[in-house]
Length: 456
Image (cartoon, rainbow, N blue to C red; front, side, top):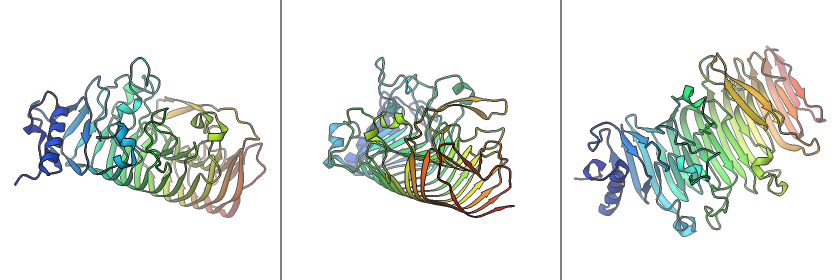
């Protein structure tokens, strides 16, 4: 009995067209399942080249069985997206799609191929499409989805993005970068891993490992991809909330392993993060700038409009547990963060500050370049900040901190700059004495409430 379709059974002018034909036939027959095998009979090799996006309807399961899919050279489109993602119908509440599954088995991989010249400088210029055309996977206004079992290699931009999507499970994903030497001499490509954008909720992200060129996992409640907001779903909640992130083993050569960012009147709340392990190695991989980056008050994110800047409580209800890292900063809190509890933070090797609250050297312009040790030196050009334009942290508890790092990247283990503290406590911290326990900027009058600090 036939239970699925196979793209090999559909003569077509391209691999993407064959896969699309298999998807369409599966829906027509009520099978709702497509299996892409390792071997591509059309090419006579174990490779599927994707030149245009495969559009996924409701109630479809796409199984990638040991296959390698690579973006075609010079192409400007996603690999997969839901069928209504870029249409006006997809922005109608009635256009919400449901039950989309992309499942990799037996080592299935997505490969970005060669860079196509589309980056954040060339996006929407000279006839180029928006940079989001470089996504492997894009789901917009989707209810109930699963992405799993894939290796994502050398993504051209972010690997996958989700907008106005909920009740999802993203798991067992591996990220690989193989073009370090080539990419050091071309335009930075902002190679995030998983990005949840506005309107995403009730999502579990777990068992994710590997290396990305920018944020490994990002929750960014900013705007849509289109300046005219034509990708907003009418009347839909724009907040990001009720997200679980766990069992992460990662390294990024820029920015953060996990990032939360909110402006433009959008909120992020009820986020639980646990078991985050920085797998970078000195002399072998880059060093993450930050392990966890919660908030960012760079004016560019709110279009230099104070009315759009985050307000107290816009990021709230954040729990963090069991973080192990050698990043330049373990946890960075910037902007307006309320009700955050972190339990279990270990700084090791050449890691920097365990906690940095504030802006200078964090939200500025950064230039990275490789050294002989394959690390990345950091040249900081901070944005000038008005000392009166301060940030606010409220109801924050950081406890069970172990500082085992060398301290050479840390002005202090606990750092504060241009930030007002309201009920911010650090409890039970053990330090090796390699760096001062506290560091405060010249404009700061508040102090951390430290309970139970001891030197090992």
